[in-house]
Image (tube, rainbow over all chains, first blue to last red; front, side, top):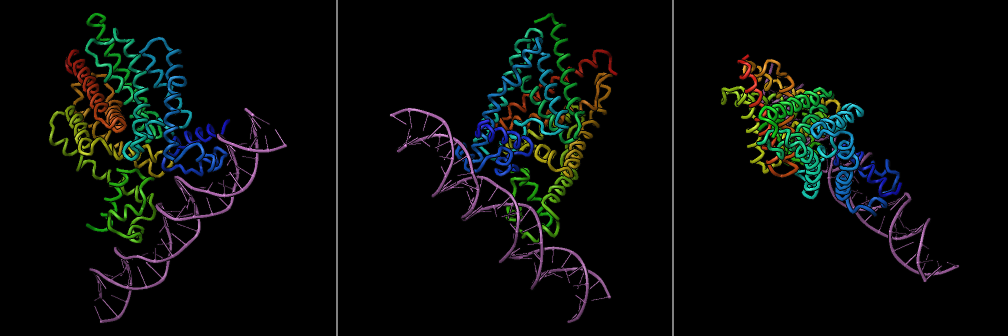
Length: 199
Length: 199
DNA sequence: GATCTTCTTGAGTGATCAGTCAATCCGCGG
DNA sequence: CCGCGGATTGACTGATCACTCAAGAAGATC
């Protein structure tokens, strides 16, 4: 792998595992098997590095996350729960650690790093837009007065809030409980729309 | 104020504003107007300090947060939205910064500080227990098969997930949208319970 | 007022932090 | 085979990190 990509990859991993501030440049270099000069040849500062990481997450969102889910599942509502399940699997794999890399950086950097904040928001907006698209696809199965924009925020809220509690508890129960209530909410929305005649 | 309390207070503020790792001991000392020797007389390490901060949050939960809400609002369901509104106000006050101090520490320390994690979980459990108590009070207005434990997780999920997105967006819209959907969900639960005859 | 404990002072510790830079390497066009 | 520019090397910088400690001040107890 090219040096720049090795450094970027190591940074993504370490920022995810330890956070931005807690990760030292020297640790990144050790994992990437590179030297300080190389890192600073490609990235002007440590902050530049996290900007590149956020851009990378943005680029990978559709090819790695939303695309596969969209292809694997036809039902747009089920895609949302497929997405939540995909995240659940990644939590099982890491033993309830790590969580959402964007969410972690959001809480760590939003206040203190004004240049990173818009990039974090852009990432979340990308997730939301994907979910929003699926909700729009299912519009005729949802109540007519259903605020799909608010609902797309809500799905992301459930994901981030559920992951936060799961990490604190070192147990997926909070996440599962949250997803179950979200499922109940969708069931009620679908039932309500059916009750009034679809659309 | 006593030196120990001044140091504890400054630590709470700064961990909230900047995070644990990003906050230096020297900054805490400057704000507390104290010397390193005093800090290390009361707290063995920086990690001890964050443990004391978490204990303090735990102690303040009922007297400062849940108690006032419980007294100000009779309807147990409305108390939940009063609580969310109270948080909203604190976000307005800080200009969409800060967010939930426990949530911030949860994402920063859960993986890397095994001694802090249980204390973070204890704090979240305290919030949950309060909400759960209110839900139990309203049990006869909710559907019989309603999982109130899951619902208490869910309320906290909405709070934390909504705050995370609000900070990233530097705008309360994501939080408001999430709370609106939660309100819709409760309305549907209450309507469903009424429909089948109360209880 | 002597004595003991608790608390405060602040200069100083080694380690680690992000970042620098001159020297060197290497692939490529001429 | 030369010259050039991007890429790499790694020792080095000053600043800051968490933390120490010997000295002394401030109260409390007898």
